[in-house]
Image (cartoon, rainbow, N blue to C red; front, side, top):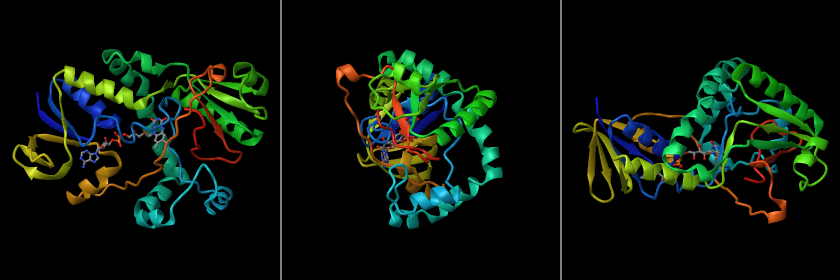
Length: 308
Ligand SMILES: Cc1cc2nc3c(=O)[nH]c(=O)nc-3n(C[C@H](O)[C@H](O)[C@H](O)COP(=O)(O)OP(=O)(O)OC[C@H]3O[C@@H](n4cnc5c(N)ncnc54)[C@H](O)[C@@H]3O)c2cc1C
């Protein structure tokens, strides 16, 4: 049965949801104050991360906590005022990162991530966006042996449990593959399955254009408020137009929490990172693999991309 649906937010999440809904025959209006894919979905590392089957844990071991608490590391930085403002979700994050809870979360999370390539594939094809995508994985680089060995052990488990494919490169293998890398690395893991996107914002735009070609409507306006009423939901926008819909999808990324709290829905949401840097490489130093990321010596959590 066809439904009238409004999707709020035209980042990667909102556009993908809208794309699939219109394909299923629904009447869909996608709303964003900007052009599609101009916020978080614009400035990211652009990896469709088939290998990332485990969510990032809140670091709980004393070594990592002592390392990051002084706030001088590159992999984890925090603003004390921001931490106070997010006490409740951070506490939930901490609790859910405990051993037994985390063990239960991993397979559920992995079941979603394992579908990422097959979910993007029809969108890439239909939107004619193949030129934006590389399908040769990415390299995770290591300076020291211990975290490298630990990561290899985890990768083996992820291969057995969740079908993650990888290749271990020792230093000789790595420099043979990427001769322009600075010397001193002990090796790398080549995650084979992930796709990399040089311009993530352009991919979102391509999906959004194809959504409109299929009959979806894109409206550029700021969402002011949402309330129950009319056919189900009423959305007020800056342009003065009020949208009515039977169903509503809230995909406003970091801004979703505020809107939902006005509806009495509390989501433990807080923002993590908000920057990106785009590096050009001289022709003679172009990496042969999609992208590289170094991991600091004692990094047990997410690390900063060097080339993306
Ligand atoms: C540095 C960095 C690297 C990353 N690398 C990767 C990676 O390699 N792979 C990966 O999968 N993920 C990565 N991520 C995460 C990924 O970018 C996000 O998970 C994803 O982009 C979130 O998409 P979204 O649609 O939820 O949010 P957004 O892209 O932020 O979209 C939300 C939209 O809502 C709109 N909006 C908000 N408020 C309103 C309003 N009041 N009215 C109208 N519109 C509104 C905004 O304009 C925006 O377009 C990275 C993130 C960062 C910061």
